[in-house]
Length: 220
Image (cartoon, rainbow, N blue to C red):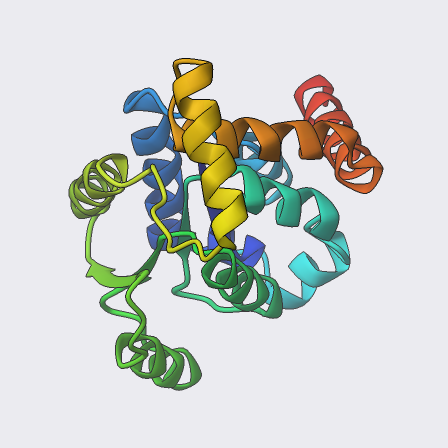
């Protein structure tokens, strides 16, 4: 299973939320899951504790490669965001994940004292969406417990079910082909989708850029 963590770089300059993000990443990897864009270790080296938000913004004028992250989200089975300190990137990616039908866990530190962030947390807590899970934590141990429970739930539903409406002649062919080739209608449909994906030049170009970004990050 593939899980993409998201966060604000400013959160890495606060000791409490820094530990929350580190534990979030460790919990994903220790569960045997992969992270498409795993940049947390490299950014940790560049961001000392207690760096001011202004200095973070100066240091990371564009902390995320939007195209790499949007493709990573499309490839992922779930998204987990540490949103104690919100920013436009984490907000956009949460919306993008939900629009793609990806389960999304939002983690917020329980003792956040910033009034603006508290207001944001109240909004997220009361935002009702079937794919969105909001949880508050007070320690790294609690982050681990929450993340593992969320991943266990996602693992049971990584296969997506949706209603497909088609013409009768399409269903007639699927019925015939499933019998003729000793397969299932689902396998015929999914194999057709993958063949389409392999021929889709725009999709393949986005995937190539995404893989190049991963390779470059691993070499940093």
